[in-house]
Length: 127
Image (cartoon, rainbow, N blue to C red; front, top):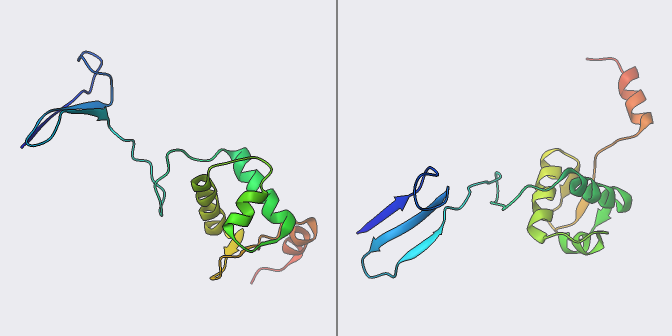
């Protein structure tokens, strides 16, 4: 049996978003924060990457075109970042069809972003 007090407003004795376990059979008293549930389609992350971080990873992959592993890409980045953040960025880039992560783990840049490609698309006739 467990009795949990969840503090919702600022009028109570605990801070907003926290909980207190008042009584739990065969367990010590516990106080802690209610975890925020932010999750992507594949994994839960504590925060979302900033735009400049995503652009840094895009620039690194676009410059070398191919990386043999995620770890090799992670170590080649000019600025340090947490590995789960890199995995979130790679998921986003793969969903937006900018990269392909092959079965052997290699990462390939596939997005075409040049003026010649834009001109060719503009001049093409729709079907």
